[in-house]
Amino acid sequence: MLLDAYAIIDEGVAVAVKAEEDELNAKLACREGCDNCCRFQGDIPLYPLELIGISWFATEKMTGLRRATLKKQLAGHGEGNPCPFLISGSCSIHLLRPVACRQFNVFYEPCDEGEDPYFTRRDDVLTPMQNYTDRAFSAMLPFYGIPDDADETRAVKNIIQTQALNLQSFDWKNLVKIMEDFDSRNSES
Ligand code: SF4
Ligand code: SF4
Image 1 (tube, rainbow, N blue to C red):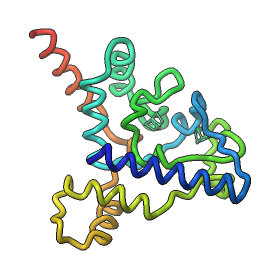
Image 2: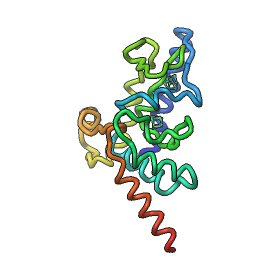
Image 3: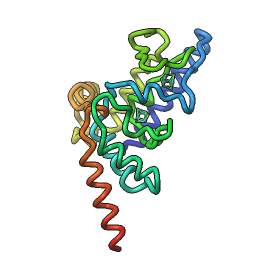
Image 4: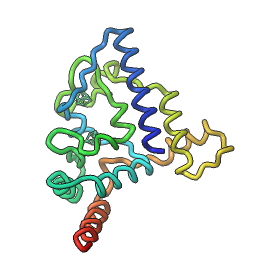
């Protein structure tokens, strides 16, 4: 469900970026290693199914030094810190990063340190295509227990309005415990 939703989101972002590039001759500034958004954005919506995806990936797929670094960052995460999943300038959960991160794209100039381009230059920030966002959240509806015959548009709107957590203010210590329990079980077997 989550991967289906992310595939729809990624397709929508690609379509929206291409449209801006073609129509406005805009050039995407986002690139690998550009991490000011991950260091300074304090409001990153995170939905419950996304939390499960991230928790699974961190617990069962991350290994070695990155795992140790992530556990340390999650345990010490507090207000005003960079995103705890940012390791050495890149997203350690890239495949499972939330919709909000996937859709946050900026044209022309990379963001400055501490800049929130939503406020400094809104026109340079990609506006995601609503129909793709709606389709992606529709793909996640079964997770929220929404029956097949429900009003899909209303259900999607309701999920978006009522279920969002904030990645940056979320208490990640429980994930550290889950990761440590997983480590203990594996070292015993
Ligand atoms: S949103 Fe800004 S800081 Fe983040 S990758 Fe794009 S240009 Fe760089
Ligand atoms: S989840 Fe990844 S992409 Fe999103 S803010 Fe954190 S490090 Fe950046």
